[in-house]
Structures are given as C-alpha cells and as structure tokens.
Image 1 (tube, rainbow, N blue to C red):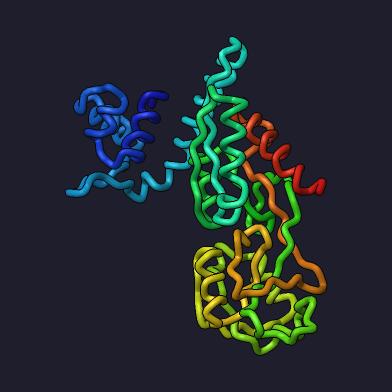
Image 2 (image 1 turned 135 degrees about the horizontal axis):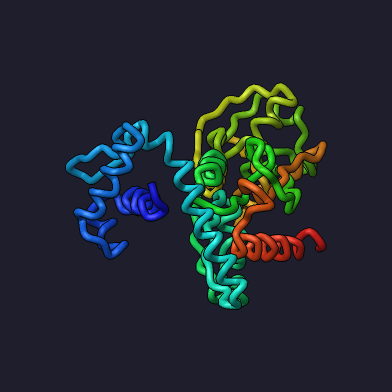
Length: 293
C-alpha cells in the first residue's frame, strides 16, 4: 500500500463514491478502482460496500479507517512542516467543537485567525462531546475544544473554567433568591440535555444525589433555554452557552460553585502540525482575554 492509496481511500470516504473521488483527485475511475482492489487484496477483506446510493465502509474498513486517517494526517503535517521551513507558511487545520463554544468563540477565532494567517485554511466540525473525541482519535480533526470531563484521556490543554448556572422560568423562584443550591433543586422538573452533550451536569446531579424528573431531553443549548421559557422545567448549563437569553428566564449561579474546565484535546501535543500549533496558540490567546477580566 502507498500514500496515494491511502489518499484515495480517504477521498472515497469523504465523497461517498468512486466517481466523485476520481474527479477530485484528477484520476480515472479505473485507477481508483484498481487502487482499492489492490488494497483489499493485500489486506484480505473488502473495504467498501457498494450500493445504489454510493459506497460506505465495510466492518473491516471501519476498523482500519482511524489508522489510515492518521497516516494521511501525518503526511499533511509533514508537508506543512516542509512548507514552513521554506518560508511558504501554507497549511490547513481542522477544528472540532461543541455547540456553546461554536456560538460564543468560534466566529471570532476564525475571523481573527484568518486576518493573521490568511495562508492557512480552517475547516470546522460541530458535534457532541463524543463526536469531538471520536474525530480527534480517527484523525478527522487536528484539535478539539471540549470539557476535560469528556476528553476520555486525550492530551488536554486547559483554557478556562466555565461556571455552571441554573436557568429558571421568571417568577418561579422566591424574589429573595440569589443563588441555587442542591436543596433548591430537589423534586424539581428538569430540562435535560443528552449525556453526550452534558457530562458535567450529569456529574453535578450525581454528586448531590439529585433525582431527575425530566420532561424534555434536548440536544442543543438554545432549544433547552426555549423549553425553560415555556415553563417545562429548570435547566442546568454552562454559562458560556447563554447567548442573548430571553427575558422570561432568570439566571442564577450555583452554590457551592461548580464549573466545567474547557480546553483543547489532541492526539499528541508533540506531533501537532505547524498550522495546528499556530491555531492552538491563537485559541489560547483569544480565551485569555476572558480569563483576565
């Protein structure tokens, strides 16, 4: 197997068909088919399942995919390093992150990074905590921004402590309420996000043995806040996710204080591509302005 065969494999996976991969790589369809056939013969298993709607990975293809992605990423990192040595500075960095970070930080990060490094392309992936971890592990992204509690043992670069807060329907709590305690939450209905998006909240509930009576099981922060607004329950969430909250909800800090630790996860701090290193430092500098306030 060769680097070209790995690149062909990756492109077929991205494009969903042999024909589209041939167009992207400027190769003939027969060359694409021959390359994959040679890989399958060498490995001893079929890598793709052909169907009317394109191709998808076989079980064997799923198993070797992370290794191929890492090889392709390593080749790209090498090219970027050589380019940097020659003073060209061109490159690409793939970032993965969660909903709240995507809304609060990413637009400014990408804009300011583009102004400082116009020669480096940025590709963004948004998903759950589980998605980001999987994307880092299989080489889809270079770096992921997520909570340390969800990083699953990946190398982690801390960025910021993001306080957890309670979002409550207006008028639901007594007027003198200044903070929300675990005692205040006992027996209350909750708006709950999926575990893959809300691991820090699940840990908080477990720590205080709070039984969840959930009327809504939501994926993203904005939908969850909307459910609070229509008085379906109380929402616990990180403060960063509060983008222009509606007037019909009240935000209370938790007492005792609880927070999630946001940071950057990667496969290896020592083997980041030059572009990923530059982006990592840019993100750290960007977030530092909030932690210094």
